[in-house]
Length: 201
Ligand code: S3P
Image (cartoon, rainbow, N blue to C red; front, side, top):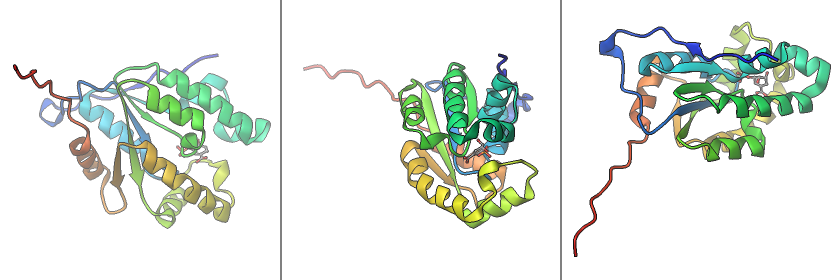
């Protein structure tokens, strides 16, 4: 079994580089299919000098099969179990921007794993369902769970509160370019807690 190495992002010019958050080791991007998790993830990683990993790509490389093949040959339940083990493996990396699959947060174990991994901060890239669906239709990515649009909308409605709840930051992406989204995201990251000296009595 092989595993994907995180993608080394081209280092930007120093003036456009932003100091990576020193108290964090992993930035996680969540959201429905078409939210821009991979596009924003690569831009963000390059901007802060971290590496980028796409969970679907990590899973494909670990199983030596494509996502549609995994669905077709083993069914969705098995795909989800493989996705969970790929997530646990991906969270072993540091200084990484990780794009989840759209369905990763549906599994409680995955949400707990993300919540309990230290120095890990999750960002939800939000947009309305019709926008996301249209974006997906323009992309050449085979997504088995999009074959039935009504069922996909139901998945969106079920997942939306989970995305919101698990994220420390939500960014509305519909009216923003990827670069603007990265700017908003960097501004919204939590600041390191400053140690206040104990007051003397
Ligand atoms: C899925 C989303 C896909 C991929 C798989 C299932 C989902 O990832 O994991 O096709 O259930 O939403 P992207 O969100 O990266 O397309």
